[in-house]
Structures are given as structure tokens and as C-alpha cells.
Length: 441
Image 1 (cartoon, rainbow, N blue to C red):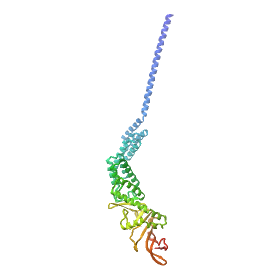
Image 2: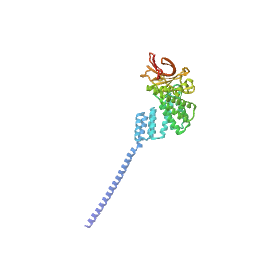
Image 3: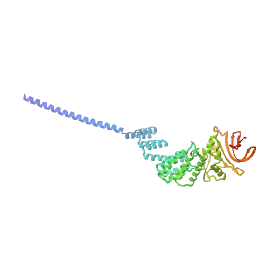
Image 4: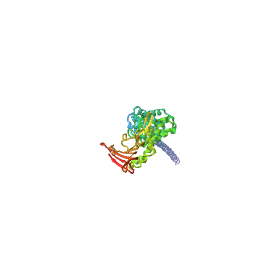
């Protein structure tokens, strides 16, 4: 019994040892499995995270854009770049890649827009520099093809704004000036094709002035002075822009004295003064109550203007005998290298709201020079006929008093209505006086 018990105990101990070894192997296997599982999970998660990183996604789309570009599938290439920018709107490479695709398509305008948009978004100077290279190349192409316009000028200004020391920018400004501001007569500011250009002109000049104020670049100052004074034999300007042009010339003149510029400023200043002087006369005529025009005719300014025209001493303002003043258009001219101006008459601008005429005719009665002024109101329904003229004369002439003709100073007011068939006139003698009389003919 003892021996059997000993064998049984030995067998039981061996079994327990085997079970312990088995459990160790199982635990070890479980631990290895868990470690492998964790490693696998971590590796898989890292792969997912890696694949989802914005930089990688952007790169994949730009690589796809390159492949589409090689296959000449340009729309798909651009779409890939747009997808890249949706992922990362600050991706400089995405903007540059898209601009390159547009350039390959020969769509320079879109390429420039993309680069400029990229610079606005990212403020990356390399995009702006690349954009300016495009601008200068475009400007050269426009000038060479004879298509230089205000957009061309704007591109060159932007290029100069970006690189103030680039001599190519100033050379192209010279070229723009030659194409835009030199030549024969041109309605540059108010009769240009596509409408008035003065607001664009003023914006461009203000940009150059602001740039000069911040940099003090002498080459830019020279361009500003040049652009302020177009070299046309004549050019037209809306009266509404006259004071703005005067203000611009004053600012430019403050940069330094220049004889031709000073003369142009004096000419424009005189035109502004004339407009201010005759503003009251226009108010009288448009009111329909003409009686106050007598005081205007007797004013020192009006008499001085009349006398200077008769004596040939009027400065800057051009005209002879019957000199028009209007409130819509003015023409600036260079005659014998000197600036002068004249206002548009009905012939030059039939749409005018009315024209006042200064009479500078030598008409003397008993040693007394007549004083005259006339007004032509706006045409009816846009047609010249019937055309009305109101004429006012202060003269020394006979006035019928108690049956006798007595010579004295008096006013005459004549209304003439011209039609295609002829002219009908009504004359009022001693107008507004005690012995007023009427006559029609």
C-alpha cells in the first residue's frame, strides 16, 4: 500500500507539473498575441492617421494634377488643384501648380488671377513676385500689339509697387505714357470708347502718388509729373471733373517746379474760376426770371472778361467775338506750346443743358461800348430745332418818351426762335424800364 501511495503521489505531482507548464505556455501565448494585437492596432492606426494628414492629401492631389496635365486633361488637373486648396487654402504649391496649368492652356488672365488670389490668401511674396513677372510680360505683349490701355497701365503700376527698384517697371511706364497720352486730338477723359476714363485715370495717378509718398523714388516722381500732363494737341474733359483735375495738378506741382505743368495748372485754375463766375448767370437763366441778369452784366468780373477778349489780353481762355460758356464739357489745348481752353458750344455738344455767350464785339454808341450777353437753353426733345436764343444788350439808344425819341442808356431783351423754316424774333426795348416797348419780326 505504501508503494502504491508513493507512485500515486508521484503521478499526481507530475500531472500538476505538466498542468503548470501548459498554463505557462497558454499565458505566454496570450501575452504574445496581445502584444501582436496591440502592435497591429497601433500600426494600422498610424497608417490611417498618416493617410489622413492634410499635407499628404494635398500632395496626392497635386501629383494627380501633374498626371492630368501630362495627359492634357487640363480641366481635371485644375479640379485636382481646387481639391487641394479645399484641404489647405494656404498651400502655396497648389496655387503655383494651378497657375502653371492655366499658363499651359494659354489662359494668362486666369493664371494671374490664381497667383494674385494666392498672394492675397497666403501673403507669400514668391507668389506676388511670380504674379508681377506675368504682369510685366503681359504689359510688353499689350504694348507690342498696340493694345495698351488702362489695364496695361495698372499692371505696370502693380509691378512697380511690388519692386520699386526694378528698372523694367519704369521703362514700361514710359511706354504706357507714349501709347496713352501722346498723339493727336483725343477725347481721353470724357469721350473715350466705353465711357469716361477720368475716374480710372485719377485712381491710377493716386496709386503712383501714394507709392511715391512712401518711397520717395525719384524715377517715380518723374513718371508722375509726366502722366499729369498729356501731350495731345487737345483733349476733352467733363466739367464735373475739372476741380478734381485741378487738385491733382496742385499735388503733382508740389513735387517740384516744371514750367509746362505750372502752365497747365494755371490754365485749369482759370477754367475753374470761369465756372464759378458764371454759376450765378446759369442760375438766373434756368430760373426763368431773367431780370437779375442786369446786375451780372454790370459786374466787374463780367466787364473785365469782355474787355480782355476785346483787347486780346485774355489768358488761357480761347475765343473771339461770341465766347461760349457751358457746364458739361471743356477742351484743353496746346497751341504754340502753351495751354489754353474753351468750352463746348451747341455744335460740339448738342446734349448741353444750356450755353451762355460772352459778347466781345466792338460796338460803340456815342462813345459808349455796348454790354451784351446771351443764353441758349437746352434743346427740346434732343433736337436742335426749334432753337431758342435769349439776348440781352445794355446800350445807348433812343427811347420814345412822351412821343419824342430821347437817347439814353437802356436794356434790350430779344427772344429768337430758329426753326428749319426761319427765325421769329420778339424785341423788348427799354426792358424793365418806364418806357418799355415791344416789337415782333
